[in-house]
Amino acid sequence: MIYILIFIIGLALGSFVNALVYRLYQGQPIILSRSGCPHCRHKLASKDLVPLFSFIILGGRCRYCKKKISFQYPLTELATAIVFVLVYWVLRPDIAAIAGSWIIAIFLVIIFLYDLKYYLILDRIALSAIVFALGFNLWCGVSFWNLLLAMIAGGGFFLVLYLISRGRWIGGGDLRLGVFAGAILGWPGVMLSIFLGYIFGALVATPLLLTGKKSFGSKLPFGTFLSAAIFVWMLWGEIIIDWYLGGLT
Image (cartoon, rainbow, N blue to C red; front, top):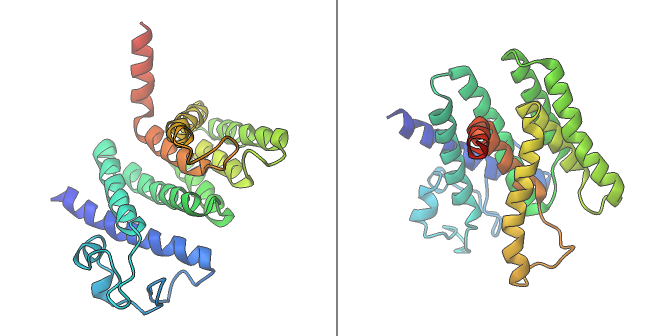
């Protein structure tokens, strides 16, 4: 029963992430405004906003103008619900760790989606995420010096790439995401998560290059890959290290 409840909460927060990303990009008020269809601008009723189920019932089309609704909406809702269930499943019964990781996961989903859609990591999201992750880990008793080293290493890695490429390879948002990774994972997890992010990026980029959908030099949303890698390392980093070291012996 608890997993069903968490799944429903995750669906609702996934719907919030969709609205947040859209409103941030459009420069609209984040709260105190009703959601509307991006095509016809018709204000949506409560029955149009039930996460996942409204999309299914409406056949993926707006009730009012009949234009197609992007699959982004149900997929983000479903992904957020799965993320919430995974956090609970892996971290139970540590309620504090679960609650903090849920909030961090929301930041990661926002960064994942925003960078995927707009090739941008917003300062207000990244900086808020850094402050929360650092404060949460300090409250949990993680060494300040370990976190500081990790944040410098994560941000410094991307700063070097930024300076070498003069901003052609990465943007300033990636630098702040590296700091965020350090604030979440500490040392050496931050560097291992960056390595994993590049693996995710290669797995996506290779078929795109082979099929001609992307060419060398094309932009890819690295923040999307790194945010996914951070989440994976946050939950299963120790297991991955143990598996790797076990394979060496």
